[in-house]
Length: 165
Image 1 (cartoon, rainbow, N blue to C red):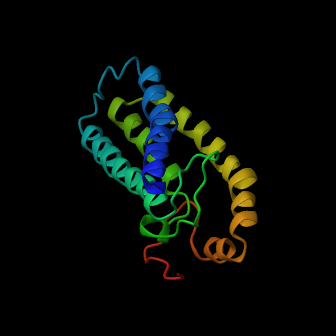
Image 2 (cartoon, rainbow, N blue to C red):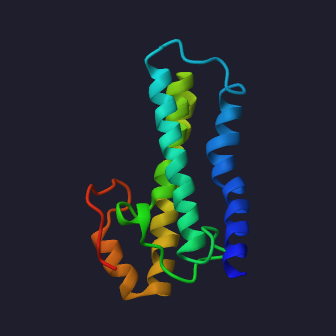
């Protein structure tokens, strides 16, 4: 039952957070996704970035539900620290994926507005992580989180997976 609630909560949060940040707002900023880039080489690169990042984002959300038995939403946190899968390479894969999706759309639509939006979103995400998430996780998980935080980079993925647990 706990896993079902975690899946449902994660699905709702997926729509509410990345769905808005990487979907609705870019849609509005690009005049409903028109026009496509006039630079033909940018279109496939944009699509690849979007597809790979979306797959990683779904993977990260699934880890929260199945491994952590919770959601990424601060109001329904995980019971366990999530350190498996993509989290063995980077501590903030959801934020990295959302920013990658936005930048992929910037390429797809040759949109400087989306580049500016991605920059603002990145500053907001980094600030949220530094001033809320990291202190909260340190209080909640103590030494386990500190060991993880020191071994796994926050934003630029490590090539080899961390094997700390």
